Image 1: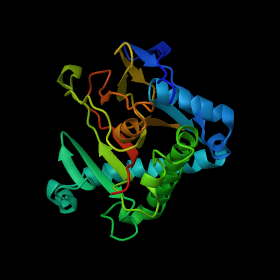
Image 2: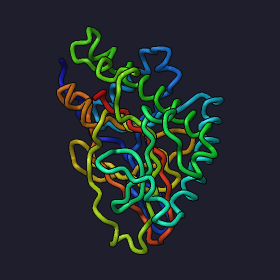
Image 3: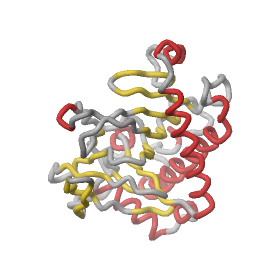
Image 4: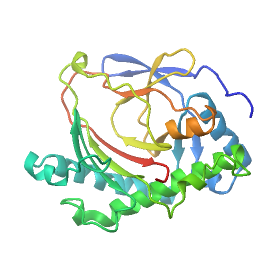
Length: 275
Protein backbone atom coordinates (compact mmCIF):
# COMPACT_ATOMS: atom_id res chain seq x y z
CA UNK A 1 0.00 0.00 0.00
CA UNK A 2 1.43 3.38 -0.97
CA UNK A 3 1.95 6.16 1.55
CA UNK A 4 -0.93 8.36 2.56
CA UNK A 5 -1.02 11.60 0.59
CA UNK A 6 -0.28 14.76 2.56
CA UNK A 7 -0.65 18.26 1.19
CA UNK A 8 -1.68 21.64 2.45
CA UNK A 9 -5.21 22.53 1.32
CA UNK A 10 -5.74 25.57 -0.86
CA UNK A 11 -7.70 28.25 0.93
CA UNK A 12 -9.37 31.50 0.07
CA UNK A 13 -10.79 34.43 2.03
CA UNK A 14 -14.50 35.24 2.03
CA UNK A 15 -16.24 38.12 3.79
CA UNK A 16 -19.36 37.02 5.68
CA UNK A 17 -21.12 39.87 7.44
CA UNK A 18 -18.29 41.82 9.02
CA UNK A 19 -16.01 38.79 9.37
CA UNK A 20 -13.16 37.68 7.13
CA UNK A 21 -13.22 33.87 6.93
CA UNK A 22 -10.43 31.54 5.81
CA UNK A 23 -12.26 28.99 3.67
CA UNK A 24 -11.05 25.61 2.43
CA UNK A 25 -11.13 25.08 -1.32
CA UNK A 26 -12.36 21.50 -1.56
CA UNK A 27 -12.58 19.32 -4.65
CA UNK A 28 -15.94 18.78 -6.36
CA UNK A 29 -16.56 15.19 -7.44
CA UNK A 30 -19.25 14.44 -10.04
CA UNK A 31 -21.44 11.55 -8.93
CA UNK A 32 -22.39 10.47 -12.45
CA UNK A 33 -18.70 10.12 -13.37
CA UNK A 34 -18.07 7.92 -10.33
CA UNK A 35 -21.06 5.79 -11.32
CA UNK A 36 -19.49 5.44 -14.78
CA UNK A 37 -16.18 4.44 -13.15
CA UNK A 38 -14.40 7.36 -14.78
CA UNK A 39 -10.69 7.01 -13.96
CA UNK A 40 -10.01 10.75 -13.79
CA UNK A 41 -12.90 11.34 -11.37
CA UNK A 42 -11.86 8.35 -9.25
CA UNK A 43 -8.35 9.78 -9.04
CA UNK A 44 -9.81 13.11 -7.83
CA UNK A 45 -11.78 11.23 -5.20
CA UNK A 46 -8.72 9.37 -3.97
CA UNK A 47 -6.70 12.60 -3.79
CA UNK A 48 -9.39 14.19 -1.62
CA UNK A 49 -9.74 11.03 0.48
CA UNK A 50 -6.03 10.79 1.21
CA UNK A 51 -5.29 14.48 1.72
CA UNK A 52 -8.04 16.13 3.80
CA UNK A 53 -10.93 13.65 3.87
CA UNK A 54 -13.49 16.32 2.92
CA UNK A 55 -14.90 17.03 -0.55
CA UNK A 56 -18.13 17.97 -2.31
CA UNK A 57 -20.24 15.69 -4.47
CA UNK A 58 -22.32 17.23 -7.25
CA UNK A 59 -25.30 15.71 -9.06
CA UNK A 60 -26.53 15.92 -12.64
CA UNK A 61 -29.26 18.49 -13.32
CA UNK A 62 -32.29 16.25 -12.90
CA UNK A 63 -31.06 14.63 -9.69
CA UNK A 64 -29.87 17.97 -8.31
CA UNK A 65 -33.33 19.46 -8.85
CA UNK A 66 -34.95 16.52 -7.09
CA UNK A 67 -32.53 16.68 -4.15
CA UNK A 68 -33.09 20.44 -3.76
CA UNK A 69 -36.85 19.89 -3.61
CA UNK A 70 -36.47 17.12 -1.04
CA UNK A 71 -34.17 19.25 1.10
CA UNK A 72 -36.72 22.07 1.23
CA UNK A 73 -39.24 19.56 2.52
CA UNK A 74 -36.77 18.25 5.09
CA UNK A 75 -35.88 21.71 6.40
CA UNK A 76 -39.54 22.68 6.74
CA UNK A 77 -40.51 19.43 8.45
CA UNK A 78 -37.49 19.68 10.74
CA UNK A 79 -38.59 23.14 11.83
CA UNK A 80 -42.07 21.85 12.58
CA UNK A 81 -40.80 18.78 14.46
CA UNK A 82 -38.23 20.55 16.61
CA UNK A 83 -40.67 23.38 17.41
CA UNK A 84 -42.99 20.93 19.19
CA UNK A 85 -43.23 20.69 22.98
CA UNK A 86 -40.53 18.63 24.67
CA UNK A 87 -42.96 15.98 25.87
CA UNK A 88 -44.13 15.39 22.30
CA UNK A 89 -40.58 15.02 20.96
CA UNK A 90 -39.57 12.75 23.84
CA UNK A 91 -42.09 10.18 22.62
CA UNK A 92 -39.50 9.45 19.90
CA UNK A 93 -36.56 9.12 22.30
CA UNK A 94 -34.65 5.80 22.11
CA UNK A 95 -32.38 4.81 24.97
CA UNK A 96 -28.92 3.49 24.00
CA UNK A 97 -29.56 3.80 20.25
CA UNK A 98 -28.17 6.12 17.60
CA UNK A 99 -31.58 6.66 16.03
CA UNK A 100 -34.77 8.31 17.21
CA UNK A 101 -34.90 11.66 19.01
CA UNK A 102 -31.88 12.92 20.95
CA UNK A 103 -31.14 16.10 22.87
CA UNK A 104 -27.54 16.66 23.94
CA UNK A 105 -26.66 20.30 23.32
CA UNK A 106 -28.31 20.01 19.92
CA UNK A 107 -31.51 18.25 18.97
CA UNK A 108 -31.63 15.49 16.40
CA UNK A 109 -33.94 12.88 14.94
CA UNK A 110 -32.55 9.93 12.97
CA UNK A 111 -34.24 7.29 10.83
CA UNK A 112 -32.14 4.19 10.22
CA UNK A 113 -32.31 2.44 6.87
CA UNK A 114 -33.25 -0.83 8.58
CA UNK A 115 -36.37 0.68 10.11
CA UNK A 116 -37.45 3.28 7.57
CA UNK A 117 -40.09 1.04 6.01
CA UNK A 118 -40.99 -0.87 9.17
CA UNK A 119 -41.99 1.65 11.81
CA UNK A 120 -44.28 4.69 11.56
CA UNK A 121 -42.61 8.07 11.43
CA UNK A 122 -43.70 10.83 13.81
CA UNK A 123 -45.58 13.87 12.59
CA UNK A 124 -44.75 15.95 10.58
CA UNK A 125 -42.26 13.56 8.91
CA UNK A 126 -44.99 10.94 8.46
CA UNK A 127 -47.11 13.21 6.27
CA UNK A 128 -44.14 13.79 3.95
CA UNK A 129 -42.48 10.40 4.15
CA UNK A 130 -42.21 9.82 0.38
CA UNK A 131 -39.72 12.63 -0.43
CA UNK A 132 -37.86 12.11 2.86
CA UNK A 133 -37.33 8.40 2.32
CA UNK A 134 -36.53 8.93 -1.36
CA UNK A 135 -33.81 11.36 -0.28
CA UNK A 136 -32.53 8.68 2.12
CA UNK A 137 -32.35 6.26 -0.81
CA UNK A 138 -30.43 8.80 -2.92
CA UNK A 139 -28.04 9.30 -0.01
CA UNK A 140 -27.48 5.57 0.32
CA UNK A 141 -26.81 5.25 -3.39
CA UNK A 142 -24.33 8.14 -3.18
CA UNK A 143 -22.29 6.79 -0.28
CA UNK A 144 -22.24 3.28 -1.78
CA UNK A 145 -20.98 4.70 -5.09
CA UNK A 146 -18.17 6.43 -3.20
CA UNK A 147 -17.44 3.25 -1.24
CA UNK A 148 -17.32 1.18 -4.42
CA UNK A 149 -14.92 3.66 -6.03
CA UNK A 150 -12.42 3.60 -3.16
CA UNK A 151 -12.83 -0.16 -2.76
CA UNK A 152 -12.05 -0.75 -6.45
CA UNK A 153 -8.87 1.28 -5.97
CA UNK A 154 -7.66 0.08 -2.57
CA UNK A 155 -9.33 -3.29 -2.18
CA UNK A 156 -9.81 -4.91 -5.61
CA UNK A 157 -9.34 -8.40 -4.12
CA UNK A 158 -11.64 -7.76 -1.16
CA UNK A 159 -8.89 -8.40 1.39
CA UNK A 160 -9.88 -5.34 3.43
CA UNK A 161 -13.57 -6.20 3.25
CA UNK A 162 -14.64 -2.63 2.56
CA UNK A 163 -17.77 -3.49 0.56
CA UNK A 164 -18.39 -6.81 2.29
CA UNK A 165 -18.66 -5.04 5.65
CA UNK A 166 -21.33 -2.69 4.21
CA UNK A 167 -23.65 -5.16 2.50
CA UNK A 168 -27.03 -3.61 1.66
CA UNK A 169 -28.78 -6.74 2.95
CA UNK A 170 -26.88 -6.66 6.26
CA UNK A 171 -28.13 -4.96 9.41
CA UNK A 172 -26.52 -1.64 10.26
CA UNK A 173 -27.19 1.75 11.84
CA UNK A 174 -26.87 3.63 8.54
CA UNK A 175 -29.52 6.31 8.26
CA UNK A 176 -30.68 9.84 7.58
CA UNK A 177 -30.50 12.38 10.39
CA UNK A 178 -32.16 15.76 10.92
CA UNK A 179 -30.46 18.20 13.28
CA UNK A 180 -31.54 21.47 14.82
CA UNK A 181 -28.51 23.55 15.73
CA UNK A 182 -29.62 26.92 17.16
CA UNK A 183 -26.91 29.52 17.10
CA UNK A 184 -25.77 31.35 20.22
CA UNK A 185 -26.29 35.06 20.78
CA UNK A 186 -22.50 35.38 21.00
CA UNK A 187 -19.87 33.38 19.14
CA UNK A 188 -17.96 33.15 22.42
CA UNK A 189 -20.80 31.03 23.85
CA UNK A 190 -20.54 28.33 21.18
CA UNK A 191 -19.55 25.02 22.82
CA UNK A 192 -16.56 23.05 21.59
CA UNK A 193 -17.86 20.29 19.30
CA UNK A 194 -14.48 19.13 17.94
CA UNK A 195 -14.75 15.50 16.81
CA UNK A 196 -14.23 12.91 14.11
CA UNK A 197 -17.16 10.89 12.80
CA UNK A 198 -17.78 7.30 13.71
CA UNK A 199 -18.95 5.05 10.92
CA UNK A 200 -17.66 5.09 7.36
CA UNK A 201 -18.92 7.99 5.18
CA UNK A 202 -20.93 11.09 6.13
CA UNK A 203 -23.02 13.36 3.91
CA UNK A 204 -24.04 16.81 5.18
CA UNK A 205 -26.30 19.56 3.91
CA UNK A 206 -26.70 22.92 5.64
CA UNK A 207 -27.68 26.26 4.11
CA UNK A 208 -25.72 28.33 6.64
CA UNK A 209 -22.04 28.77 7.52
CA UNK A 210 -21.75 26.13 10.21
CA UNK A 211 -18.80 23.77 9.65
CA UNK A 212 -15.06 24.06 10.18
CA UNK A 213 -12.36 21.51 9.37
CA UNK A 214 -8.90 21.16 10.87
CA UNK A 215 -6.28 20.64 8.19
CA UNK A 216 -4.45 17.34 8.32
CA UNK A 217 -0.88 18.60 8.44
CA UNK A 218 -0.88 22.17 9.76
CA UNK A 219 -3.90 21.73 12.09
CA UNK A 220 -5.24 25.08 10.88
CA UNK A 221 -8.99 25.63 11.22
CA UNK A 222 -10.73 26.53 7.95
CA UNK A 223 -14.39 27.22 7.27
CA UNK A 224 -16.32 25.04 4.84
CA UNK A 225 -18.46 26.87 2.29
CA UNK A 226 -22.12 25.67 2.37
CA UNK A 227 -22.22 25.53 -1.41
CA UNK A 228 -25.67 25.15 -2.97
CA UNK A 229 -26.24 22.33 -5.43
CA UNK A 230 -23.84 19.88 -3.83
CA UNK A 231 -23.36 17.88 -0.65
CA UNK A 232 -20.39 17.95 1.71
CA UNK A 233 -18.81 14.52 2.20
CA UNK A 234 -16.22 13.18 4.59
CA UNK A 235 -14.72 9.82 5.38
CA UNK A 236 -15.05 8.56 8.94
CA UNK A 237 -13.23 6.49 11.54
CA UNK A 238 -14.14 2.98 10.41
CA UNK A 239 -12.76 3.38 6.89
CA UNK A 240 -9.68 5.17 8.21
CA UNK A 241 -9.01 2.21 10.49
CA UNK A 242 -9.74 -0.43 7.84
CA UNK A 243 -7.36 1.18 5.33
CA UNK A 244 -4.51 1.79 7.75
CA UNK A 245 -5.05 5.54 7.58
CA UNK A 246 -5.11 5.72 3.79
CA UNK A 247 -8.65 7.14 3.90
CA UNK A 248 -8.55 10.10 6.26
CA UNK A 249 -11.24 10.83 8.87
CA UNK A 250 -10.93 14.60 9.38
CA UNK A 251 -11.24 16.51 12.63
CA UNK A 252 -14.06 19.04 12.37
CA UNK A 253 -16.60 21.00 14.40
CA UNK A 254 -19.89 22.86 14.20
CA UNK A 255 -19.57 26.59 14.84
CA UNK A 256 -20.83 29.98 13.67
CA UNK A 257 -18.94 32.97 12.27
CA UNK A 258 -21.28 35.69 13.56
CA UNK A 259 -23.29 36.58 16.65
CA UNK A 260 -27.02 36.03 16.42
CA UNK A 261 -29.42 33.39 17.70
CA UNK A 262 -31.13 31.91 14.65
CA UNK A 263 -32.10 28.30 14.08
CA UNK A 264 -30.05 26.27 11.64
CA UNK A 265 -31.09 22.92 10.25
CA UNK A 266 -28.83 20.14 9.01
CA UNK A 267 -29.65 17.06 6.96
CA UNK A 268 -27.05 14.32 7.13
CA UNK A 269 -26.64 10.69 6.16
CA UNK A 270 -24.31 8.22 7.83
CA UNK A 271 -23.04 5.04 6.19
CA UNK A 272 -22.09 2.68 9.01
CA UNK A 273 -20.70 -0.87 8.81
CA UNK A 274 -22.87 -3.93 9.26
CA UNK A 275 -23.36 -5.22 12.78
